[in-house]
Length: 300
Image (cartoon, rainbow, N blue to C red; front, side, top):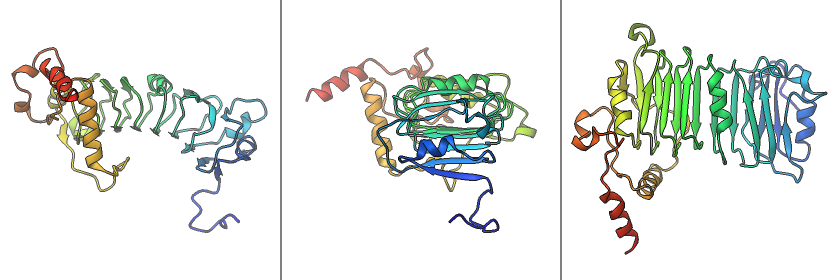
C-alpha cells in the first residue's frame, strides 16, 4: 500500500515509480494526469520493447504536469521522445543505461537540470538539446560518447563530465559557471570560454576538479587564463562516485597508449608543467616516439 498522505516517506503527493516488467508500458500509457514526478527503475526486460512518447494519441494529456522524469533503467526501451510541447512543465531529466538500439529525441529548451550515464551508441540527442537549452542550470554526464560539447546558458552553474573518454573539445558560454568537474576525462584537448568569464563579485569562483584528467595544452592554458578558475577541493559526495580509483587510472593509461599519447597527466594550474614542446599547435606536444614506444611494448 502507498504511504499515507502525511507519511514523511512520501516525497510528493504526485510521484509515481514504475518497475520494468510486462506491465511497464501499460503503466506509462495510463499515468495519472496529476503526476509531477515519474521514475522508471530496474526490474526485468520483456520481449516487447517499451516506448516513452508523450505525444502519442490518447496519452498526451497525461504528462502536462510532469516536472521531474528519471529513466534510470532504459534497457528495453526502443523509443524515448520528449518535446517541450508535450511535457511543458518538465525541468529535471535523468536518462541512464541507454542501449544503442534506443532512438532518443530531446527537444527541451526549458530544461533546467539534466543528468545521464552509461549510454551505448551516440549521444547526438543530448548535444542537439544543449543547442537550445538556454535556461540550463546543471548538467552531469558520465560515460557518454561525446566528441564535442557546447553550452550556452547564463543560468548554468554546474557542469560534470566524468569519464567521457572521447570528449576532445568543450565550449562554455556560461558567465556564471561555478563548478566544472572534468574527473577521469582522458582526451580533452581544448576548452573555450565564450561570452566573457562573468563578474567575480557576483558569480564567485569557478571551482575546477580534474582528478586523473588528461587535459591538452590548450585546455590547461584556457583554465589558467580564466580569472575565476581555482582548484576545487574534493566534495564529500561525488555526483558519480568512483568505485575504484586505481581502475580509473589504469583505464586512462590504456586509452592514452592506444592513441599514442603521453600517459602523464599534467596539472592544469601549473604553468611550469607545460614545457617547451607543449606550446605548439599540438594540444599535448607528444613526440612520435610515444607511438613507436607503444608498438615496441606491445610486440614484446
